[in-house]
Length: 431
Image (cartoon, rainbow, N blue to C red; front, side, top):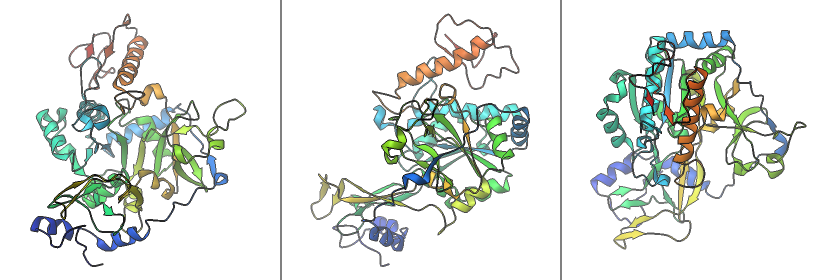
């Protein structure tokens, strides 16, 4: 396809021309032709509840996971491309302080959990931090300022997810953000997976002996990074894509549902689940479709190589959006009142149906899911603080330590197998 100049442009500056050279205009033309296509609705009868393994993990499964960690076969993939806009925080969300006592940031908690797993098993766990153009430089500088929270430089990699230009809905021409800059937006959470291939990370992981990648999102400080039981079950099942599940408690809860769709593993967005299915209950009163997805996955490296292969992997979804853009003809930005643009995203859950072998494992909401999403309403910092304090209180009480109702926090670096939990010193916070 011939290169198109952005809307309102008669020529391109050197900087803009360089951006245009990097665009696959044939792909954009195909996406633009699909702008009026409606996503095929999933037939309700093709959606069935997925089999979910209980939280109980056998000693053999745990041993399998621990052995894999001692062989250095796991990498941790931290999805951290977003800013804290909904929190009123104009920095990468991972820089938000969430430690209820320490004030530790999300980045610190995730990095120290990764380091703790590596120390416990005697082999590094590479931490892959997925950023975006809006967060990359600030994220890297933040980690550098804090000495990468103890991680060796060789064991942390920052990489950016891809971007896609926004197209003018009426003409299909790219939009500008400024006189010399295209309007580019992140290509969706599925772009995390494709970026592993596009940046050359996947072959590097394979050459390093990495066989499994643990995917999780930055906003959930309770995630169990490198959970040996989960990893062991994934290995025992020879699963290509394994997912943790938190059970929904109410039909209207806004969380995607893990299910089988046409006999394949998949996720149905809460907005796409028919009302009669969302409200359906089993004989014991539990929701029939209750396998909520907290976006915690284990992927095998060969599976990631397959789903990110160009031409055969994840497809783009086309969405109509309102996009403020720069119009060279007016010499200023234009804020539209109606949808004026097309944006393109890939979704990570589109990878799940490509797995020939999959596994769904239950986890407790109180033990592993406390996402920070909003400044007010639900999933606020107050909710996260309560969840973290309750989590750490349970650990202390189980070890015979009385907290007397005080807020407590235990550092991820504290190893209860090496030191008595009653002797909380060093990087352990107790107040």
